Length: 346
Image 1 (tube, one colour):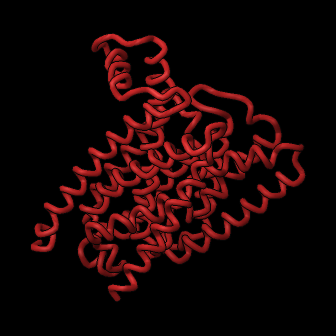
Image 2: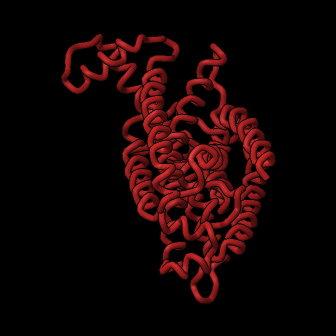
Image 3: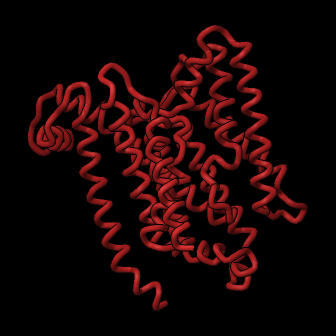
């Protein structure tokens, strides 16, 4: 208890500071684009959309209908992937775990490849594209297969079996995706590569509702399990000795973070390194206790992807960079730095 209280003011300061920085960064993200706008113009346009003051109709359309949903989507993707990564690293006891460790990226890619190689990917549906729906179904299919392989006769989900099953299913899905691309029509590989590297450019308000609900529910449920996750950090036996229903908790959290990951992949494609690196960065700043780590991880993950999207559409004047390219360029040096700092403390 003394340790929890001693670190609380510092973690609150970090959380408040990062939250303010996130809000300012989202404003910058809305302002920057092919037609740069001032922050005052952005504020007026948002105010006008809710009935406060007036703004130019064109500016309001650019801000509210095009750029704001994109920035909000980037924040949701970052927050969701980061918190899912933090939970999976604790539940599996694997510091290299990320939201895609259960084979969901392979399943999502397979679903997307199926529709892209058959021409169905050009269609749209209410609330999103056919590719997004196929990626979501592929993610869930891979997850169910992993659970079916990994679950024991007693109904438990053991971390080692789960990771191995996730690797196997992911590799199988990747092999099938490669076969479809190889035998598919000309241009399939290019379309698949563009989708698989991640982007938030096509996000609009009608595709954000489900994502916002699922991400919010996941974050709230994970925060409610922060003390339980602290117990899991010391192992399954320690968690059980503290009164935790281990099997039920594992099923609940695995299902929640997997569903959240599937929704985020369907929205933005595969965005790498966020779920792996951000939780480690946050633990480096505020320590291992989850009541500090999880809120910070949500905000820090959102901040990373918002800035990654800003960089992706600002570096080159005539094209956008893939989102995963930017997050990898940011994430790899950060991860190496953390490893070197950790080596210095051992």
